[in-house]
Length: 551
Image (cartoon, rainbow, N blue to C red; front, side):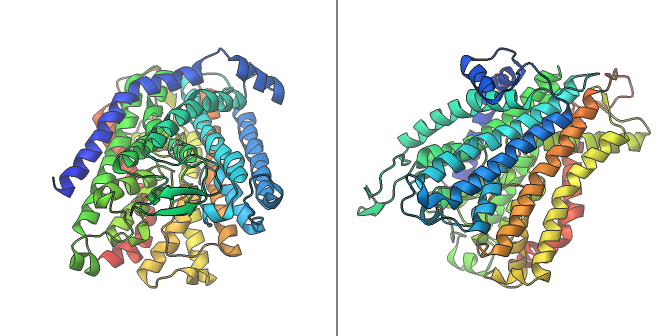
């Protein structure tokens, strides 16, 4: 079987599996966020933190709860790292430097999980488990909660309440993320992923010898990072390390976990607004963009463009032999289409156009299918912009799922879209203007791509690294930390404000002039608007970087 055929079957099997689980898992998610009964454990948590689970919250209260929870999480995680040498299971490691602790705390709380350090030589077991891994859960739960709040804005009318953040956070963590993480960890351990707390375990290497390694909770962290589309990794080599991702079938499982929740959430949207076909339209847009990206990334990598790849016959630099070119390219597309950031190959070693695809995936706003929660609310914002543009074209007031899109709503949607490009482009320009681009190990267009990738990954809360650039300096840790912080919470504020505005409206009955938003035409329009907006914003930067290098 040729590598191309094997790669195509790999992708088709993923598509088939995601289609099979879309409805049952989406319905489970809907029951979790729409249910009214609380378990005994949940009621105990509410009493412990002093929360009334029956109390609804306006968008402002909901936003303040998100920000307060995240601020406390950042402070706690920062202190955890700074006091590491005094903690149990520190492995004798030194405290993390102040600027590095700031960057890491912001990174994991914002669901980015950008790592400027080597995990196995910087963080002790307790910080990894009780600090970073906990944020893998709750930061993902925050994203889903915000998405659900926006959906409630569409589903509800003449009310200011969007639900209760603390209830959403608790339910999503306990009923969705924890159970699937446990099952996923068991599957990965069966596939050979390490799960222990040994300080020096003798393990067989792929060459038949043995080596002493520092053990760690790799299996549980691996499934948490993929399930929550978090990224990060116990080892610096991330999912390229054989202890984290030993074989092609564990590679398949990890990609499946990356895509499971983001591709299931549109089902929740359809159920909550009472029109499942609206959810089908949203997931169709995600699927079209995702399949196009996966296909192009594979095509560019299998074509092996460039002097050295052409000379040796394959673009295998930076890729694991056990995954080959195609499975590596598919993983790269999946991790940059979502906000995962995990890597099983080094994107800096990709062909120029293959590397451009990983960069372009993040520039889409990570909506195909995007991060857990963040992908859905990003796609719904793009749907709002699309119906507004369509309304201008035909001279009618734009409507979407029974809600009128007026000047207030489109302002929030526009501000949401403008945040990330501003952070990416201003950050990249500042790096060059201040000379901090000199930490890139390359020159010319490739150096621009490395710097652009770093700011794109941070601002979109992706977390993957292009490699080939040193980002452990105080300037880089501070700058990327600010991009992660603003790139996460400014859009969340605009999304919740949009949700509050929609929830206060009365439903608008559909008429003959209402644009059908469940048909293939609308799917094509949303996909087109997404690509056009990204092209207009980033094409000049791409032309100077990966396009120039590729051509």
